[in-house]
Image (cartoon, rainbow over all chains, first blue to last red; front, side, top):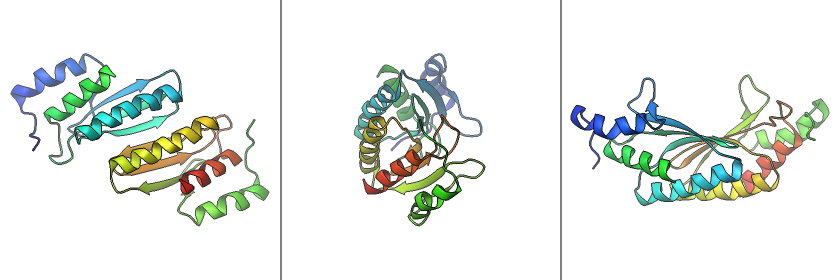
Amino acid sequence: MSETLFDDTRGPLLDPLFANGWSMVEGRDAIEKHFKFKNFADAFGWMTRAAIWSEKWDHHPEWFNVYNKVHVILTTHSIDGLSALDAKLARKLDSL
Amino acid sequence: MSETLFDDTRGPLLDPLFANGWSMVEGRDAIEKHFKFKNFADAFGWMTRAAIWSEKWDHHPEWFNVYNKVHVILTTHSIDGLSALDAKLARKLDSL
């Protein structure tokens, strides 16, 4: 079961993401990032690799794609807020 | 080059789509449909097949996915409105 991030864990998990282009979603306990690729094939190829990790970890993004752009929002729906899984998936997305 | 749909071509191309769950997007010359699947793997599997057709036809959707749901918007960005390609891609998405 995922647990909400509390004050003592939020900083260490989220600050490195904020330094890497992630930000809080206005009005939600969620993080977001805009990814840009060379073209659609590159964008969707990246989404496909991300999808496999998402399914493997049973933790899925909210994401919007148009051509070479992908807007990703991460939150943990079961707790209606951020958990360590969101930080883990964000780090994976940055590494792909 | 894609051409805007005019009055005489809109009905024959769009009416069958409206009868199949598509609708106009408010404030845009674009069509949208909400697709729902059994789970994420089914939703993303469908998106992958759709992505291949999109790339083949060089005509890409705006789409939003969260878990088993996919919201698709189709329009032709080069003409800022609907073209016959949107109807063709919509029919393909319905058939996948």
